[in-house]
Length: 356
Image 1 (cartoon, one colour):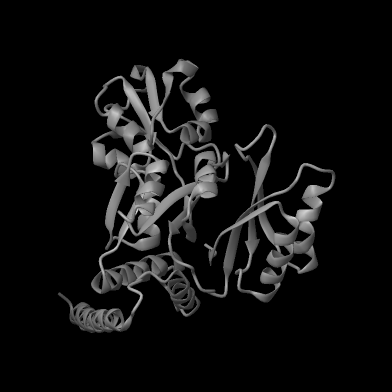
Image 2 (cartoon, rainbow, N blue to C red; image 1 turned 90 degrees about the vertical axis):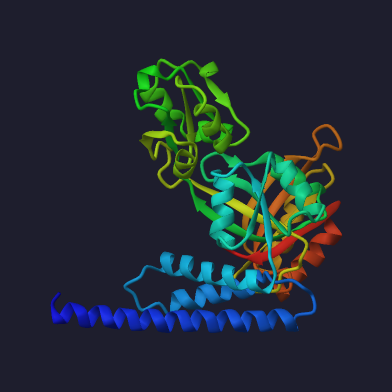
């Protein structure tokens, strides 16, 4: 070993020792914070968002901002766990994109609660069997996840955060010969996201050979039990169920992204870069939508999403899901919401939370 190489490795060892001491010191401070807190709440989305933003702004390189974000997410996850163990529910089993979104937001030092359906995620958090839940709400290619939107209308829970997850789809099976595949299991959203690839590369499969599964991980489980079946799922699902990758990144849109929401019971304070979600309805009359949106323009509140959904209370009755830029405690957002409350037949604020 050259003297120069030895010196570099000695410097790395010294830095590693220093990092260990600093992480331990941070963890000790987190434990002290946990003892001082009276509420028992250890997850502060606004505080964590501010830390991640600051670390990325101060990042000198050469490590990318994405890796810096992942590193500090894991550090905060570890420190949270030392304050108080925290559980997060998501659509399971292990290997789903929902689990990937949960780990991206909360880090790996959590107790994972895999649920059989989106309904079960809501029920698990509502019954306090988990502290938080992660649910998909919309995809950049296929639009809104209707079941999540319906449950947001009914639940007493609030939105505490959001996750933007780039979604890459993989075709997997027990073997890699595409001509031997006679059926494909996957979640309906994933099948739709890969429609063009499937018709181009597997033209021998009929529509009936595309079988809906409760989740992509469940699809991988079913494919693992059938040597003539394949699944569309995440790369991690292939690893978990021992399947071979037949094709990767088969989504039709290379920028395919799914937005997930964090649901819980707490009110989140402003972080400085926030989003507010709400549901409104109006009487069925001419110009009703304009009347609802007028306060937003009046108080210069930007709207990033407007989605209609059947209200299930009457024929051709609809509610509107709206995302606003800003926190409900911001002066202009608060004024617009106060005005909107007078004009809407129904208004429910789902929550304000740090924007992803």
